[in-house]
Amino acid sequence: MKKTLTGEESLKLIEEMIQASKNNYKKHHGIYFLFWGYLSIAVVGLFAILRSTVGFPEAHYVWFLFLLGFVFNFLQMRKGRNSRPVVTKIDVVIGKIWLGVSFGMATLFGAGPVLTDKMFPLSLVVIAIATYAHGAIISFKPFMVGAFIMLLAASISFYMPNSDVVLGLYVGGLLLGYIIPGHMLRNQKEANV
Image 1: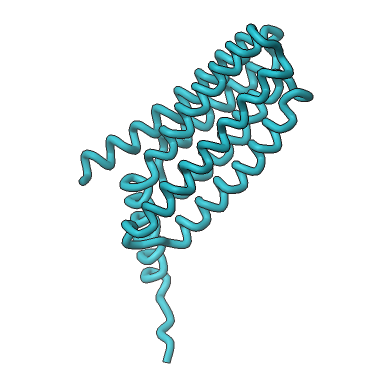
Image 2 (image 1 turned 90 degrees about the vertical axis):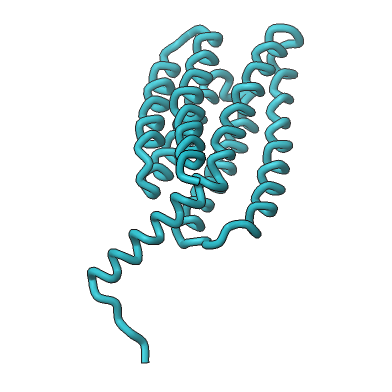
């Protein structure tokens, strides 16, 4: 006979799942925020250099470097799968959110030659939405605040006529809204281990 959970037991179970998810991200996935943030800044820097040296259309080939990031990400996830004691539904939902972001980002960067500098604020909006959702799900306020910082940078970027300012806002948004919260998550992990 199946036991029905009381309201209090259900809430306790949900809280335990959220805590297990937080611990997974502190222990295993904090590195992904740092990896993707630093990779994005490096690729954007290389894009800026190539755009000013070889020209605009050719510079967009640099976005293919993100494919290497996906390979690294895939290998790290496979390696980490064995060391994670618990995979919760929350972990699965967060993973699907970021998979959707990956498809959205691939679409934006693929349309980069057409979107020109609008690609950067649009991609910040996509990243910010996922970062906010991630932060809300695991109750990590630095991600939620970081999402608003990225949205602010994106909003300003839409009105900037200078492409160098747009790139600077993109990098600043990623640094303040994504990388610094990623370091905060990693520091929590190190303090709690």
